[in-house]
Length: 106
Image (tube, rainbow, N blue to C red; front, side, top):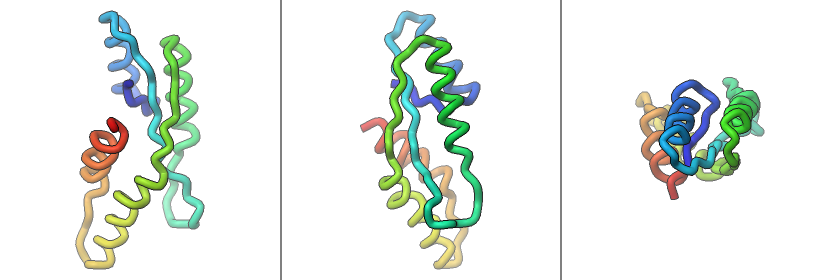
């Protein structure tokens, strides 16, 4: 499974693996739905559409992996707790470790 974000890097990685003869399945990590009215915008719906379009273009199976609960527990709560403690948390590092190379691979 290749994590497809709909961006150039993941699209190119999937295409190169196919070109090398690997069987590839595209996976999109659905991490966030702002049902709580928190400030900020996450264009996950357009990202999902982009990732799905890439998979369709490449002719590969596409799956959406629902990680909303895990993302809330491991990233959003970490971020909010850090701000409460007066530190500047780094959600990108945590997301890579906990989500992309953690829960998603499992």
